[in-house]
Length: 282
Image (cartoon, rainbow, N blue to C red; front, side):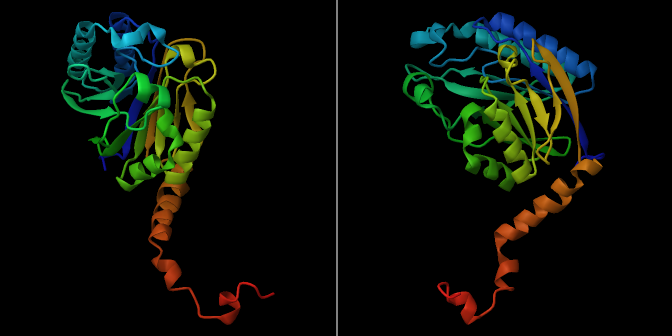
């Protein structure tokens, strides 16, 4: 745990295009805004740097991507992270070798400008799996100022086991990046937050915000803050373990559920009773 049990994170809702140069400029503008507000970590959407591929994105047909500007913009983003002293988690396509399709990834950049890890989306959609991306095979967690962060992407919101995995790994906040305008994603993310006692940062592109703005959800499942719905925006939220509104979620519900899942407390309270074992009696 950090000295204060508090960290300020920023969700940067940028416009995502097929031009890595434009995307990179928007990302770095948002990083500066976040740093000016005291953020220690800046979280961006799926595909924020490179653009996102998918069935509705015909401009990526055949994967004729110029990877040089993607790499250049990633390096420039890393350089600025070091200058500002902020962590950055940003989405993009990660190139593999030869004819292998890329990963749909989140790059994790520390406050020294080093690329310390990368999360590659594991559970792809049918369209992604058959036409666009190579699935990943690993979990990604990292620690900043005494808080543990984990990463998930888009339709992985639909798989409860991935969120329970985050809880089991001691994650405090899931950085959930998506390129979806489906408002049910926020509903599901709020449920995962409440069920697992997690903060959830939801980052979407500006063009998706009309129906599903970016947001930060508390471990009680309630919204802490949302971005605007009509364009780019940067919001900052303090993740505060001492917030009285989160006492039940963090200090009572979350540990109690761990105890309940272990099951020992129930074994000791079970009894040998014929009216219990006879399940057809009245």
